Amino acid sequence: MTRSQTLRRLQAVGAAAAVAAGTLAASAPAAQAAPQAPSGSARCTAPQLAGGWYGANQARLQQLIDRYHSCDPYRDARSKPVAVFDWDNTVVKNDVGDATMFWLLRNGKIRQPAHRDWHTTSRNLTDQAAAALSTACDGIGRPGEPLPTHTPAGTACADQINAVYGTGATTAGAAAFAGWNRRTTEPSYAWLPQLMQGWTAKDVRAFAAAARTENLAAPIGAKQQVGSGTATGWVRYYDQQKDLIGKLRKAGIDVWISSASPQPVVEVWAKGVGVDADHVIGIRNTTTRGGTFTPHFQGCGSVRDGADTMITYIDGKRCWINKEIFGVRGAAAEKVQPAARRQVFAAGDSDTDISFLRDATALRLVVNRNKNELMCRAYDNSDGRWIVNPMFIEPKKQKSGPYPCSTTGYVNPDGTTGPVRRWDRSIVPDQQDTVF
Image 1 (cartoon, rainbow, N blue to C red):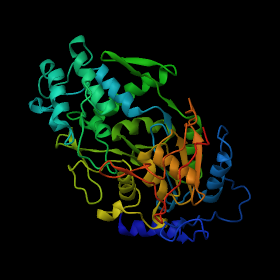
Image 2 (image 1 turned 90 degrees about the horizontal axis):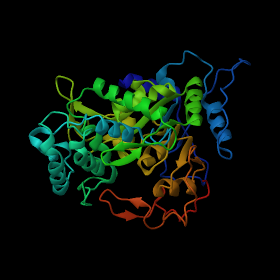
Image 3 (image 1 turned 180 degrees about the horizontal axis):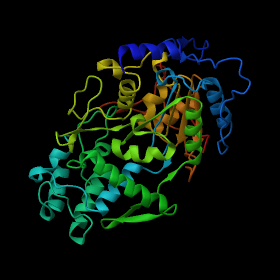
Image 4 (image 1 turned 120 degrees about the vertical axis):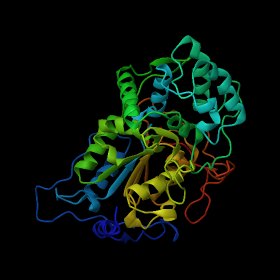
């Protein structure tokens, strides 16, 4: 987005509205003013949401649509209010990254690293994990060639890869990753696109499409064989979220997806809710001149390409949203932007979504999966803009005991924990789980 385009977006969306006294500390980001629909058209009505929501959530979401919808079918894209959704377990039940990893292992599509050096797949991989992967995998494939993890000879290799990816530890229990910033990356999430090295985006989209077909066809609760064990074998779109996305788009709101799954994978799945690839922000590999993926990532903010330290994860989601949607460049993309340069709505289910949810100026939808920091902030609801909904399929039971907001609910960049704090630095008290 050019500087002039950004200016037009700012002018069209409007200036920041003052926040009602007492609802936010002075240091908190202000709310964004709603655009006004053209007058004089009695036939201009906002699209209406379908049911299936908890409590008053449907009414709150409808109020958002009523407030921001446009009667102008030709409204320029740069002037549209923005809504951003997380993907896995927010728009769909289960994880499309997991579904793709299981498909890759079941079909022998992960390549042996160059020189059989597993450290080249992640700068955060521990020596213990690299050694365990070498022991399990080096004898069954040539460097650069796909490993036969779908065969009996590749079972131990499949088990080791799946353990490192899924648990962050080897099959023997040794820590698989070390030395990462807990607010900008998650090495086990990042490892999936890193293991896609050697394939093109087109290849990965084909793999994801095959996995999508299988997982949508499988019955709810289905398991699939991966290595010597079983794993979740089904995914479903949430009907309520699909309807919400469709109604937001119909209302003239610019809907984006931000996910910590690989970019081509989310592109394939997002088509199912009408969101095109150019409105998807996933983990993005760098590529060779021939177009094949490397095990490194594109950078954001002050992080250069190949540094591999800023994926779409917590503060990294904020950076990538600021960069791709609002045209913010350089280190400024890592910061909270003025209200007119932020999304009006955000939806998420996990602590990975905290930063971009907090940045939303009008309403924030949380799907309750019992995640500490997220639920602390949602239930504290210090500015009245948070709403909580149980999972639409197989909802979690009520959490026993309070969320530890005042003590250990926040994870620092180095992995230590502390209290969850509001914008004014006051501590959020422990919260009970009340929406389940």
